[in-house]
Image (tube, rainbow, N blue to C red; front, side, top):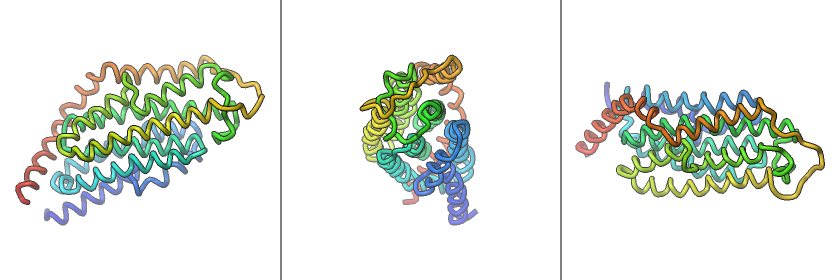
Length: 294
């Protein structure tokens, strides 16, 4: 097919998956969807459905249209960079805890998009790890926000505060997953983001440097969420019960999985190595042809 036809078809695939990932400026549906969805719906959306878009890019857009993808890569990586900061800044302004977590997902998926289009096998495998780890950590945060809503009957963080000593286990576990989400060493999120940044540095050092500074903003909105929800003056004197065994088993299982990915990611890296090597070879060849044509 002609170069123009390949580019148009690739762009159609990219836009379709960009809406689902989501990529700025196709992201506006996600916070509203999370705000309206029940806890189970948010867990499904954050943990599984968003990741199918990244899978679609890796499985269809890049292998089917490698030359067009290589030409489009700088634009895609720039969109990922915009998503990192745009999602983080909007997360700052949220008072609804579920909308804050939703915008944090927009920010984290920016790293995945950068890794996918970097052309580095290390970054591609990092994107896979980040997809897995973010699926676990975001799902856990939505579960915890649902458990918090059951006790306080509000998602507005302005109506919370002073809950750290009033709800057994929930605040400490929320702090762990918030820290994991921003890339706490020893968790899967750290491994994914580290591989993405290290792998991307070879081909796009400036994008890597700017994206790394985005991690600082991630720590700010994560800690803002914890501070608003659990610290400060108490807004109510109502008696709040702690987490029961069912709730603890649910989130502790996710915590163990997240730590396992962070401490021993090799099984996941080995599983994705062959496929990501193929994608990297297609992209590398396309990048070489593009450079020689210029």
